[in-house]
Length: 201
Image (tube, rainbow, N blue to C red):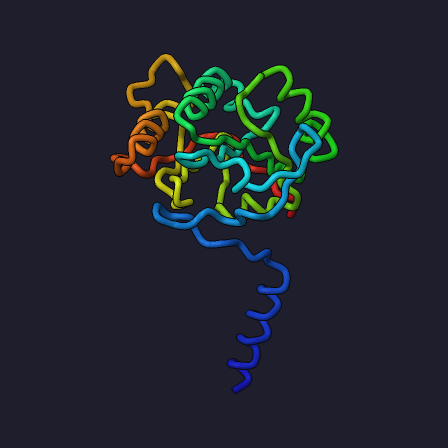
């Protein structure tokens, strides 16, 4: 009896001090928090649904100062343009709450966005709510949804996040092409490699 009571007490304490995280988002899952409002670097509050294009939505978790973001800047710029040309809306999400007072502030996000000229929105994810809902952990990390708001691809931009010169498979590019054509995505998941999202806990 005492062992059961002790177990229940420990379980309660762990639940109280450990933040609740959403489950992993798998292909076929619906778009999380589609109508919630998030602050964009333009100064406007937007929802994910308002960004979605006729053929779907691409959500990219990013950052201002991550070395992997620097290695992927050209690829990100190209993929944002490609998605836009295929009527897929794009939003980049900054969830680095632990660094919000420094290089990941809204002001720094605005400066970064102006220098990169990505064809996408760039929103501040307060308290990493979106990162938790997506179970996103790296930057860059990509999630592609079709016109019905179902996840069709998640993972990396390509098969060589660390070195653009050794890319063999354009994973996200292929997924966008297939989604825009109304086809099933051949490769729906890949391992994302990047900097850890800095949650404030």
